[in-house]
Length: 304
Ligand SMILES: C[S@@+](CC[C@H](N)C(=O)[O-])C[C@H]1O[C@@H](n2cnc3c(N)ncnc32)[C@H](O)[C@@H]1O
Image 1 (cartoon, rainbow, N blue to C red):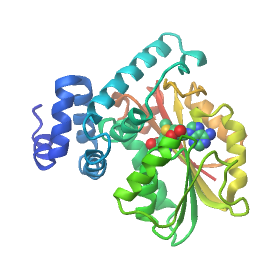
Image 2: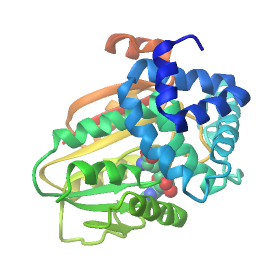
Image 3: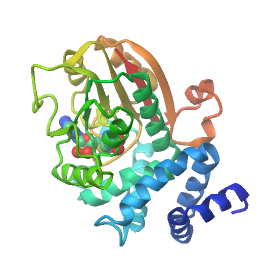
Image 4: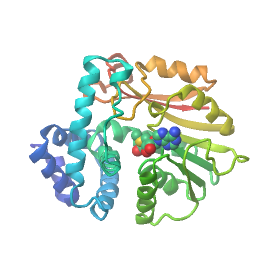
């Protein structure tokens, strides 16, 4: 490492220093990725890193969270290589995989600070939260995972009613622990499958978050159409779609950015803002490059 700004950042952030040292010892590519995220996002990284590392350091994962992350990334890289060699839907997922939900949640959190791609998704989510800002409202996060996105929403929209939905029980336990750690106890309610287990069917939403969930669904088109009916007139949806990203539970293949755009149009949704978020950093210099050089990553849209 010969970057003075990064060295200073590590000196001032001991938890990041520890993370970087472990990554450097065990997985040089992940260490480089962390360094690159700092180079690209600088001060923005600090906020996420402080949140996530201080939470993990006191969590049930404190003894081995970096190791859990490294092992999961190795597994996902193998799955990705197998999909890249034969990019068909059946190679995208692995239903036989026995993935520990703790490892899954640790990776969701740590990837926000070690991969540019996840940090950009969180940044886009924050921009969406600023975009919808008004004093009061109701928002649902479907597939809330670790609950970190609920924390980001609550911080900026403290008077909003927030509903977090996830089909996984451990996601619920971990999300509650995370929110408790950040002293967030008000205005947040939880449900399982959305929209089937909606907490109240006679209330509509000002906003719905669909962050890294669409590729987990068998029929994302029907799901999006249902989401439309859950929105208040003038409400917004934040949606991401993973394109060509293999994961054991990614059962729906989006093979191109245009496929994502087409699905939104077919579901009667109008795109207000879109962003292309590639997995590889070399293709990020301009919006035009992002699309022209795109191979895999996320398509993000704010739709109405
Ligand atoms: C990749 S994680 C994304 C978590 C979080 N939104 C984030 O970006 O960090 C996808 C989540 O969706 C949940 N999930 C999958 N299918 C679901 C469904 N039909 N309804 C609600 N949650 C679902 C999974 O349990 C998992 O926690």
